[in-house]
Length: 387
Image (spheres, rainbow, N blue to C red):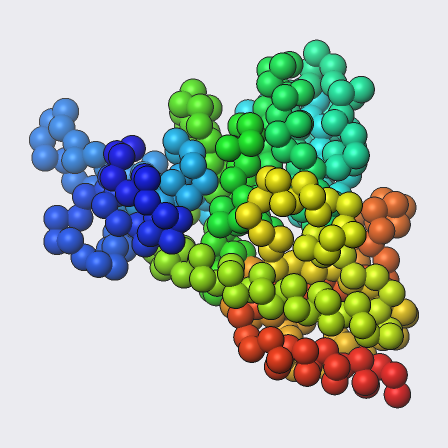
């Protein structure tokens, strides 16, 4: 990786200027190399690319941008966030043990419970926002895996403190940074070994493509992951890579606007009579508020809130117009999600209840619309629910 553009602002890094991948025509919009294979100049010679399953110039450009945004030495781009996580877990052997946060995206939990366990991996669920997991570590423990803030309950974990535990024991610390994006938080700077992103969300930012990322500093770890990606054949396509590059160009300004909207909406939700709880790490009474100020540069655009009854939930979801009732997050449009039947549907009921995922819980991914319009929509929906 060259030093060009390394010491400039985050906003400038998002433009992907002066990176390592050569484009001899100097196109402002980096080209889509929509090709499966590359010709060789001669026997024993290569132009640096051989086959797009292994590497592709468009994907390489994207990976260089992501590595810089997360202050990492290397990034790998995958066909989805789950594909990235599944590839990461191919590092482990049957009998290996992984500590995972008690509150995680349901798709991750499904992978760990239904696929990884079948392959002989063992897991311990721990609330890492209150417990550093030391009591669960054994000689078979290979990694600690978490989100911060968590999905959907917004628990905040001290990455730096946890990293001191994992480094002392030679354990990988993996942080899913999807909710915050590299604009607000950089876990590698705090001691994490691997950063995970669902690029589908804030990085892509427009609900038009699916992708995932792993970002690392260690060269040996990068080589192992690239070998697995090439072998499994789950790298991001050239076209999706181009869409991600395009999305990143506006990442900073989208995150700023979405967070500003989210803070306003979270405060407004607290004033709604039918809302019993609003969970947003930007509130000073949130348990993770001071920690967020220490390890992040903002509070993000995700809000979880609980209403008085399942009937109110139904009224909101059946009548939403400006909000989209959809299972995702991180785009320019505001989405409202019902975790119990969508993102966390396959988690056992007992575990859902323990986490706090009830039939009255909703999650908002706040977009960049006019905030007054979003508040008017909230008021309209609650007025319908009160009738």
